[in-house]
Image (cartoon, rainbow over all chains, first blue to last red; front, side, top):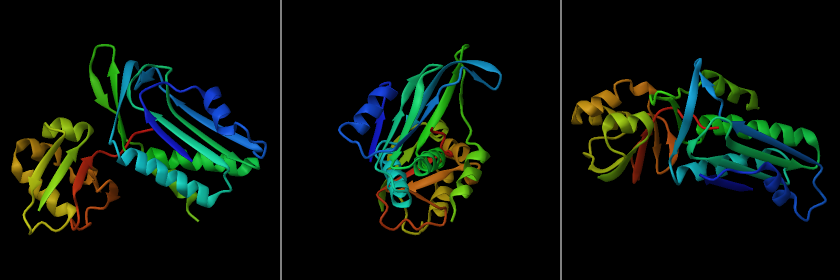
Length: 151
Length: 85
């Protein structure tokens, strides 16, 4: 279980290799990458800036990762979330879930993203090419997505 | 009691500062009470907390509801609904 909050870009291949190094017991690796889209509300995006709550961010991500490990037979997992100013096309978040069989890996990766989207204290501000900035609003569909994980 | 208040995103922009140490009167019992009290501290606070239902709160880095008591609070953060991922 690893959580990293960083300004630096991440590389999927490097992270999967690090997660699986020396192991032959893993049967399924599922990854999710969230990226910055170049358009928002029909306008071109110049950049996106991610603010966060140092301390609570890492704690919330670690909490949701522990919940996923308690619920599914995961052999390893990783969450990397970037902060700072990002450009269209940049990776924002990487989630990796590894388990002996695929269903748990798919479900855990999905669960980690649904919880991250509603609980991890990050806030996005989009800057348009004219320099004007708008804070992104949370989406009701993200809150609704959580209900699919209720047992 | 003295607590550290933290503000994030547009809450921070409206209040005009990211953090401050505040002496909260003993009569302030819950998060909702604290928000009501903060609104009286000046127009920038009134503006930031005008729609209290949109504001989310964390005490000691844990999400709490508006009814949560302030007992044991060292750090209280106010922010909009999160938008990471």
